[in-house]
Amino acid sequence: MADIAQAMLRDALDAFVRRDTALAQSVLDRDDTLDGLKTTINHDLLALMLQDPSVIEPAMELILISRHLERIGDHATNIAEDIIFVVSAKDVRHATPSGS
Image (cartoon, rainbow, N blue to C red; front, top):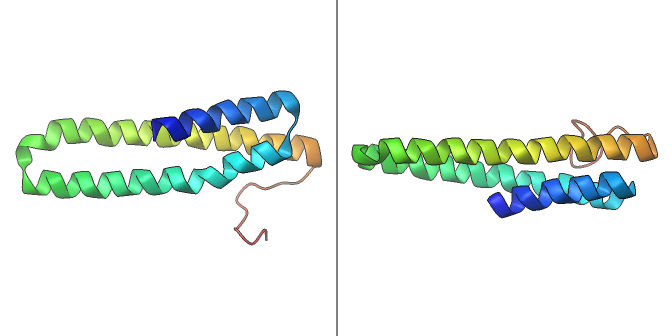
């Protein structure tokens, strides 16, 4: 997750500097992957905590870390959406995958 979030943020900032909508779109395309990883991690850690209460504290720390990494991806996505709007006047916020 950290590698994906870091790459998304780096690419969003590069897209901003270059006014590169294709690179900005690639940031948007990776957001679902990061969201899915967070969901998977949270489910797996919850199951582990139910099986073994002694891991609750470290598992909660990992859940919080995954939440914060996912938020970094969300911020990168917001930057990418703004780049696409500024460069092409196209509002892609809250768009469905089909583009409507």
